[in-house]
Image (cartoon, rainbow, N blue to C red):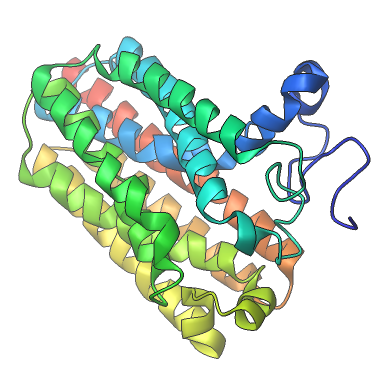
Length: 314
């Protein structure tokens, strides 16, 4: 296949990633199905968790963010992103075979059978559940509830031009879970943070979806990229602005101060840079801008964590 190298690497993977060199050859298709060689996905899943943990700490008087929680959420994000991608690949295997960027994935390319993928899905989910059990009871049940959002997302592209919205529901659940893991309940701040994260997902995943719009039109798959078309820049500007306003409001409700608000301004500059650079007819540019949202999210986390530390000192 034209999109698949001789060693089975997936078309849009990060070049020379460690997973394509250090994972034993027989296990590489499973590592690719979990997207280990495309770490941006678990970063985008993780960052709302980290925002929430830092802001929850601020609401409790400030201090250094709980390192153990940060690490547990990172491990959980890698596992749940892998499980979600595996489930998505099982559901979308026939669609993926028709799309240039995705036909080199392990199932449509024949590297992994559907039965093997199902077993791998269960293994990842069980490991993630073990991590979830390290949290308080409220957070455990809240984490289990997130499975509903994960389950419905892969089917949405068949029925609505807004599958990115449903991805947002799933990918930002950590904004609720991180707060619950620290505080043991939900408040309005994490709910507003969750809404802000959803708007952010609508922005970055619309950029990502522009890579596949021609194939999507041919096979009848829907996306916000197709829905917005030539008006994409306007929609993305609205999503970025809404995301920043809501995330900033969540910080204000949690008691965050100037450092956090400054990080929101810096993230806003990054969002503006993305819009200035975006060419929706350039798939390579779209992929690079999509991946740059790791920095967008890290800027916000740095502001939240730094502000929380300063609050304790002062």
